[in-house]
Length: 253
Image 1 (cartoon, one colour):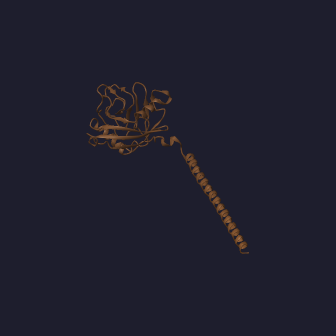
Image 2 (cartoon, helix red, strand yellow):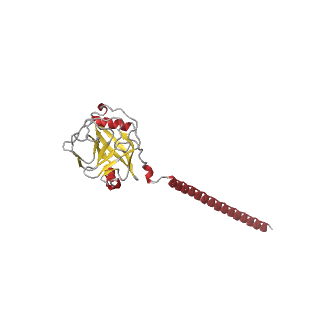
Image 3 (cartoon, one colour):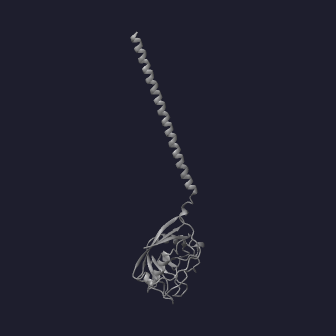
């Protein structure tokens, strides 16, 4: 009799153990299912956010807003002592199409103190921010002309200055030269506009004595060359670049 009860108890214990094992297995399966559901939910949310970001993005060109074609505040001409006997590093944060680049200039305050003082003061005052390069020449002389916020070639910071400083005696402007632009032949007509020379150019000094060389391009000349390679709007040799250039900001050191 005792043996029968013991066997029954043993069977009951086994059945209880099996039931406990089945319940544990069911709980484990449910846990795995909920884990997978949670994982898929997270992945779906991440995918949705990624798609939303792409939809709301303006694409590659979002990094290159169009230049703001408008006059800026007027400035007082800085004294040459601001830059005299000093070397300045200036970074133009530029973009064209879907390409961005830092065009780094080294400005020589000893060779052209008035031009450098004017340029640095305008840069630090935000004059060039949001402007563009309105003119490209691809025949005879090879320059990208920038610094006019009106994009017309006639804009100024409210002053003009001269005379010409540090013009090359042989009329040759090597690739990488940074020079001040003038209005016509007037040596007293420099303002905010400047040339980035991307290929060696010979510019006759004429009656005004050439152009003020006030710096060199130490980095980013390949960006300027790429703009030049894209040509002038309408296929001309002198005019607006086919791929517009925007200067988003300028840093000085």
